[in-house]
Image 1 (cartoon, rainbow, N blue to C red):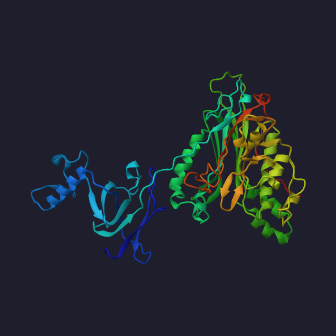
Image 2 (cartoon, one colour):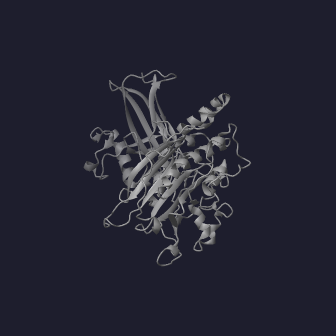
Image 3 (spheres, helix red, strand yellow):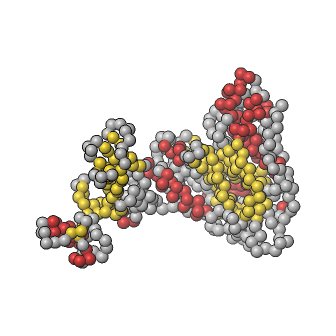
Length: 511
């Protein structure tokens, strides 16, 4: 039976990283087919390569060899009773030979997290399948390349605009005055599904594994110490959601008033119904996408303030707009419909924040619509084969501005940071830096009549990316994070807002 069955073991990458859990894919099947095996159990043993043996280990190996030839010596479980012979002050040491190397056992579970002690040494996993009778069905031995060290993170600090404070100091600091302001982060974290598409061959395979990227992204996001997180491309394999959005906020600072889940494909149905019959199938294909927006209205908590103290309410919209070089009409459709609902919330007096990956470059029609409040004439790249724009309201009354434009407006920002901005577009030179595209797709927009920016996260440049395309071992997404500090303008603090409508995106029949 041992020759009939085989243990198959796969790793996302053959290069382990210290501190990143190794969780191999393991299965048992009949050689050359997918016949289901009988009941079995799996046993695992992890080993680290020993390039040079410590003196105590050399003594142990010599004694073990001697004990194997002397029946008067007692050996337990293939190892030496070390307490009796005083070689080591730990449990029985298990050393084996294999693949022309000497190995010491470091683990016995399915998963293993390499430590600092493993750096520069290869790891060896022995997987054994055992049937109900205790008979070994098959053995698999997998050897990795040497364990590498986790790359040192690159710190990104905040630029605080001290002219808005009671005292001035042009230096950059990492923490804001949280009693006065709140910090908002927007970040497309790159869905794991896209990393296996072959689009990122410039990046080492070990840096594309989800185990590594999850740890690296989490450390980066936590280092920013934001009050509100807006993440895009939050992928759920169980729910088949690729372009999902997730919004987090500090419960000690805010409480949720109401939440809206906006699905753009539902908004497309009334438009598709009024298209000419021969265009409806194409309309379904073009407009029925899985992109969404998550909109929450948050209210400041009292946090020990008097009941009469002013409290602010803000609306945070988090979205990921459809991508695709031939989908300019789809992007405009989604952005216009997002604003259609937000404009109703804005009319209640509540400050608005819009965070997300718009998949739209500065100067594109969706970008001009957001910033200018209208699209007077379409750009040369705009393509609308179905005439979707005829069914859209291409103007709005919201006073929106991009947070990072403040870098060029402030006299307190150094020239080095300003050089990372596009002076004409008033946007960063890039927020996405991947093989297929380099440019700005991500934005933090705000109600400039009700909010003011008093801090921004420093932008990155080619040098800070270590002259690498994204993602990379240092940066685990093909986008870069944006973050801004906001304060509610005095005139908007403590005002009695009108109640927002229960469903600002309620569908109406399109004429």
